[in-house]
Image (cartoon, rainbow, N blue to C red; front, side):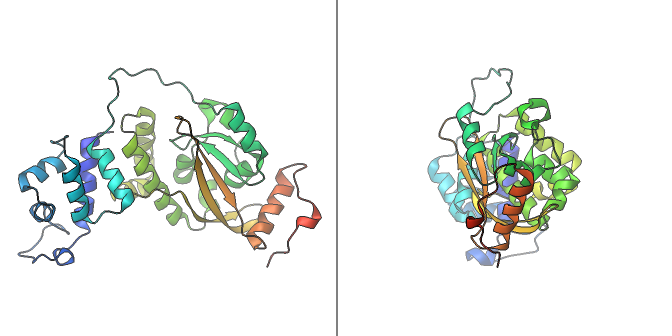
Length: 295
């Protein structure tokens, strides 16, 4: 991905959401585009208009911490956006020699842990490719796919690709637009951290070409580190469920992370997960004493 271009796009989208009156400036004359002008943003940040223009055009790659802090304050960036700004302004530089990329695999101990957990779990790499899932995780997010697909690099599902290009996955999320916004905002964070990842760039390019909805969302440059929250499902086997999700990143340098789902005790969603477990995971139904009637 072209990091200077991404930096300019990000800065322009953030300028566009601020009005002069929002930041205590007086607006003069008609504006061809919404938001602050470059010279107004430069004034707020305490840098020259020429310098800020070069930065936004990708012609300056040595911005100091003080300058980036000032621009972040002027643009009123949140914490995730500030980190993203630094990732784009100071992209990681590799050795210059690209090694052939080898398929990634989950460690045996990680796979064992995923299989042992009694909630839906999906293990992913940084590109959202599924490296492993337990039976309940597979049944929840992609029961229409071969459960063994993550074991074959050429067939591995990718949650981003499924969300935007697979009609079965689209039907799984009744609030699909919300899920799509969340997915693109997370992907922007990852793309900013790993600008030299060719496979990640290829995924983004594929989605830009094949999904107008992805392209429209990507153009807004949303940024959000979505590590927890609530997702709505309409599962073809058990119906509607609202499940909490948490993400856990492994402590090594692999970039692998677990996406885990749970239901509030006593909720209809807990009953839904119990039903899903009983119909898809042989021998893993809970004892009757653990069953809590859904409210």
